Length: 252
Image 1 (cartoon, rainbow, N blue to C red):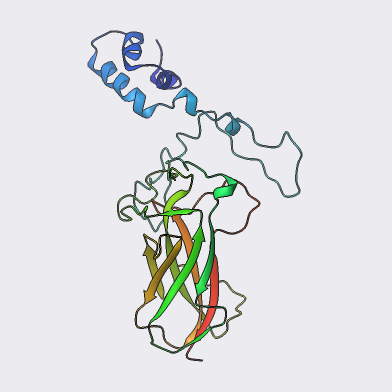
Image 2: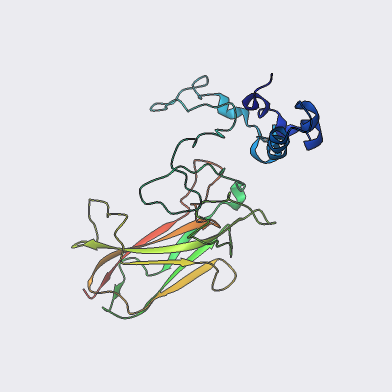
């Protein structure tokens, strides 16, 4: 008798009626339910990526290169038994089984440059100012519910081949100097904003820091994200950064 685990390897490539005919006996409600679910929970044959069968060590080795994990079914069950992300922001950690999604061409990669604040700019304390970043390669307006669909769908592309997404801004206090040697705590920030759409329809994202900031040394960073808030995924490793950061002072 064929096991369900074995059948799932190929049921994704056949029709529902074929699945029902293959599984015996006909009319069994459990088998009917499993056959109906096959088209949803089984990996389709044309979605199988054979690249995951190799650990990458058979070709030319590079210093520091480590073997890749391998799997014959796209790591479809990688998160089995783990705490699932399930659309939530889980501070204690989780496992997300949703695929990375569509990846743009090198001619459509995301790039960003912060226009404001400028490098080393000196601002007045507690005075509203604007953050602006100019982007390319990002189709603005993709912004899903961050409380229930976080990382819950793959990265997708527009009809122009651009990543559909949005931008984030984060400001962190650097302490007594603009040139610290210790990285700031990523959980500690003085300002954060998600910006769904552009200000000009041409890749410029902007937001106000209402009421400004107290005197200090700060770093502002932009973060490009796909619609479900995941960092954008690029097609090649050797490239420029998709995000930008700037340091500035307030009341100094």
